[in-house]
Length: 552
Image (cartoon, rainbow, N blue to C red; front, side, top):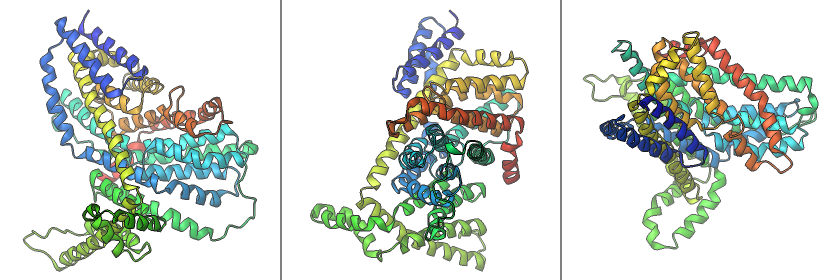
């Protein structure tokens, strides 16, 4: 038995082990180590290759881009605890409620906003399922339309930046592209970054949202009974404009601060993720938590040993005038800092500092003071309302899961290459009829098939490092390739039998909604995903135009 056959057997075995329900990270690393020792016994694998693992792990630990992952996770979990989706769905339902299909359009629109604010698919699907599914069913929506819309809208966090998927994929593609260029003799390739992927995924994400909405509008015209209106035509809603402004403006400003700072070149993805985390904390620190927080403060100080630890939070309440003024001021301070940082050179160690730059520096310092004031108030409310501890725990669990899988996938990738598996993949892709088109079609088909059974993280960490260096030698844009992968991976959340979005919704759906109704409801949206994938394949400029305009 040759090493190539062992590498194929290793890939097949790890797929079986994953389907059996074993933890992903330990399945990848354990299977790889077992086949490494088998290969070494047969004199087909050099165990000294495993000595490269420490350097890979250190590379992950010092990678500044990956710091954005726990920050974006914190941002998403905090916004979930802040009941942002509940407010958005209620307000958008009132705004579009008089239109046929208006509630479904509201769900898609809210899914887009949550995707640009959180990027956590599971939390979005569960929250929207709990809040909007009973309302849609009560309004007379067909269960297939209601469940399909919620599942599809909840997965927009995969493609619309800032997305954790894009952060992880960008880091892997950066190494794969550099390796591919070295193979063809280019030792100074143009770098591809997470920022490029963010810009490249923006327009395809908006196209996907537009296709979702177009499908709902077609249904509302051709089959009006499947998606009726929520509010009778002509019925007035008190202070609707005020509700829309107060509910939509904060997440819109947060999206502008995070995504705008990245695309505008003001901040790196990691820095923007930190801005988003603070912004999410400020959004969560609403006046509705003040009473609970003050009661918790009094109870906490009944124990003298806790007083020193809680003193900063007590000070935060002392600085709090009893309303949201500190929080709003801090939010404006963040936007002001982004504007000042982008417009002026704030480095005070220059040989010559102009008066304007000195004034801008002073303004930036004052904005930092305002931000610290609001942040202290926000932290006090979140801590004493038992929100901060839950958010930190969830962030730790999700981030640990992602990075442990990344480390396990590093073992798998190293052993797979050591056994010559990459040579088999390269020969297979080069033998595909149709050249570059055939190779891309084969890669997309494999990823689509694996999406029926595996999570997007396993596909990113296992498949992309193997096929990426090979496919990127075929003179294609790495940004376009990354966006194609992202849209394809988004479909993995929707495809039965193991689509995670379907299981998330099944867990919160009422008993009268059958699992088959959920499966049937998602079929049109899977078709829309494939249409979007075909559009990006046929018109690569959808993914490459915006990065070219912004960064070239």
